[in-house]
Each structure stands twice: as C-alpha cells, then as structure tokens.
Length: 276
Image 1 (cartoon, helix red, strand yellow):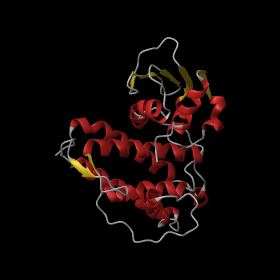
Image 2 (image 1 turned 30 degrees about the horizontal axis):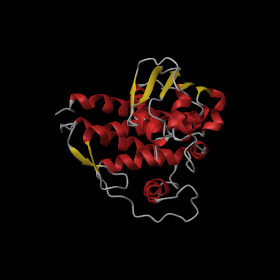
Image 3 (image 1 turned 45 degrees about the vertical axis):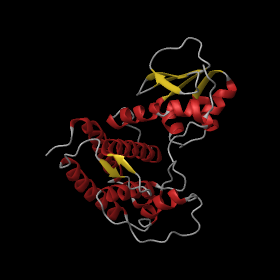
C-alpha cells in the first residue's frame, strides 16, 4: 500500500523538515535546549515538544493528563492552553529524552504515512483542540507547513540557517500566498478595485498581485499590475516571519519596501500574520 500520489508532495515536505529538525537538535548541549525562539514563551525544547506532541496525536495517542502552571504569560486562550499541555509536560525532559522521543515518533509516523492508502478527500479529525474534521489532504499539508515553519524557528534560534527553499519552504509559500486574498480584502479592508503587489526575493522568489473586485472579494494571481494601489518588496525570510507572526512589522521596517497607499499598506501589514 502506498500514499495517494496527490498527497506525496506534502509527505515528502514533512519528511524532509522533521528529519532536518532531528539532525539540528541531536548534537545540542543541554543548555542549547533552553535558547529562546521567536515563538512567544517557547524555547528550543518547547518547539520540539510541540512537534512531537502533535505527531503523537496524529498517531492516535491519548493526550497527557497535565495541569498547566498559572504563570505562563503566553497562554491566553483555550487554543493556546490546549497546545501548551504537550509542551509543558516535557519541560523537565533531558536532551537525550527529547532526541530519543523525537526519533521514535518520526519512525512511527513515517510508517503510518507509508501505509496510508486513503483518498485525499477522506475526512479526518483535526487534533489541535477542535472536533472539526478536515480532509486528509488539507491535514497533511498543514502538518508539513507547521513542521517546516518550526524548523525555521529552530534554525534562527540556533544560528543555523538553511532549507529556506526546501520542499517544505515551497509548500509554505503556496499556503501563505493562498491566504493573501483574505488578508488584503477582508482583514485589511482594501476597497473595491484595489490591487496589491508582493515582490518577494531571496531563496524563494515570486511576484503575486491581489485584486479586489467590485464585491469586495479578493483573488491572487502571478500577473503584473501597472501602478498597483500598494506594492511590497521584501525578502522571503522576512515575508515568512511576518506571515507566521514571528515578528512585528515595525521590527523589520528596514527590510520591507512599501510604495503607494500608506494607510492601506499599514493595515495589510497589521493583518499579515495568518497563523494562530
């Protein structure tokens, strides 16, 4: 039995990223596991714990029975409380315990994926704190996206850049570009007839234009718009950090070139983060 061909890109991206995470953390000293990341309140250990925890839930394992401390400032709602349980329960784990559990989890999840011959449209329960069902295709794409973004969190925290244009990076580009119409038309409230261009350079390069129709609905394409309402030019890593809420727009203002309607540009940047 093999995975459906249309699911293979997401499986390949997930495999590449989670194995890269394993290689990154395997040689770390105990002190390195405590390095802070751009995820609020999370260390290197916490990011890896989160990755392990979600994969364990994808395997169908029961969630840990664990009471969170009351002083976690970054835990602000039910979703973050749900996510934090798998993280906090591992905060006392040693480096060896972390790497061993990660390796064992990768082996089991890889086996599960290899033996999965379900249709891409099969409904599956999404494990992260909801009873909602998603298609298998969307679930695997989301996992590949999440794992690659966390690989990059770890790389920045550890000072080991790389893999910005890996299979996970290209999948993430498509996920984030797909969110642009909502960001521009709905969240930022761009007016009918507005065009917003994004020129992204670096290891991953693309030019996309969001167009808002007369009904206020947004669409995105790869064509060039002459005289757009707003034009952004920035590097791929900065785009990623903004879109995933790792950094606030004012902190990277020197890395983002903006032309056109300043008020709309500020509204778009304020709404740019699309991850929880």
